[in-house]
Image (spheres, rainbow, N blue to C red):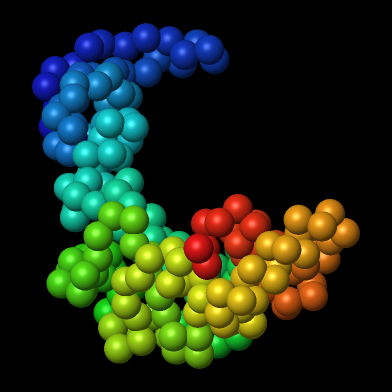
Length: 194
């Protein structure tokens, strides 16, 4: 950080004199007061504004929907602490080296049909890489999920009819058809298989 001026000394809680100075942060251009020795060695002020500027400066995608999709892919494949890791990284699904950085992923997405509202679809046994991914609607993505047994409108209507009887819970229907409760909810609420 750039030293603007020294401000003198002030005792800390242990009555030790500390030298203070005013510095200018090279990242966010804020003026900050720091201990004289700490400010000279610091590369930035560390403020929330500084961190935000630094992050956005790199590629401008932080916080966008596409950036969240990318971080979700990385989490599913690489973070063993995530709940859905066993269904992705835990069963050998990886992300290609190129997509470990956001900019190549963003460039691929934008040149391969990405639009707001679309989801990334990966072939069930494929990895997250350009050759096995494409952009699809929620409806299309639900039809291709692993273990999905609902193959046509008749089966979806059968699920709706069983649910309307009141004799089956969504959990029971999910077990009966070997699909998620969310998929049952989407079908019974006409969000998929309309």
